[in-house]
Image (tube, rainbow, N blue to C red; front, side, top):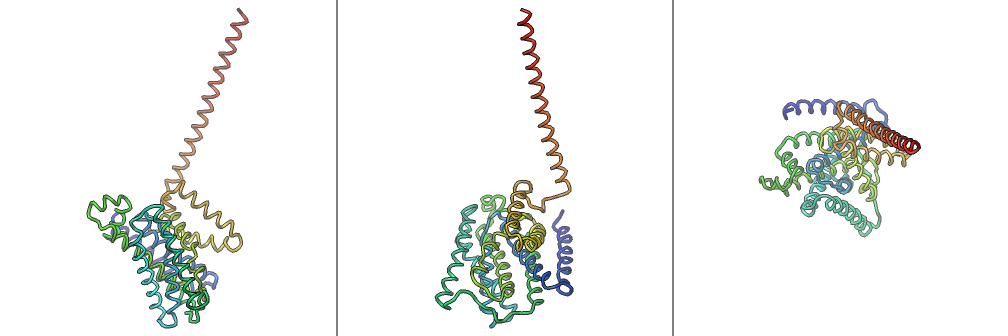
Length: 345
């Protein structure tokens, strides 16, 4: 399928989903809108995370850092700046942090990169906690200026739409091809003339910008924010989990997984939190073992392939059992013949 045909397929799907989500506040109650906000938040976070990490195969655990920085940037300036300016500021501060962080750690890969991004996230969280205690004498901020529910909802919807649209555009651009080359073989990409360091920093900053914008938009939902809330590691871990289960290297996988996980969260987390975490772990294990490409790699032929594999496994077991039975029968016959010969003698 050519790039033009995939764009013709993806753009109408995105517009239809956006139109459906835009009509939700007109007929849904507050609970449904709240659940939709959570869903849209993880759509933006997982889609932007997959754009960089799924393509380059760099496992970043810094999503909660960018989300928290954007939330604090928006909360501190919300009573001084217009609403959209606060969102843009949150995105800009998070992107600047990603440029600084990426310049320092993006030369690493694998476990080292993941551990360092998580460590820097915790460092930022504790640094902000210390600064608030020293400067303000308390921890946390009460938001006195809060936009209307529909304003917050449509802003979050716009950020999610921009994240998916950016993913569609970047994956078909030279930047997307360069990131795909880094994911396939970074040394070969360098040999072919790709400035891998610059490409990685740009991709990392794009991911951070959407996380920061979403943090600034979602901060007003709580009306009171503190580092333990907006820098919660669970936000980053669940973003990674959603992207991996949905298919981090795909476009629609993280979006579909975000919807499924949001429904599961509302259905299980409040009443049965242990069961919710068990379901998350089980889905991750099954995805890694049987669907390494995520739910997006599930096609019509996959269940048939699983069925054929199980049938072949059963045949091998039954064949082994038959051979073992035949061998035992032959040994028994030889032993009986030997005993009869001894008695005749």
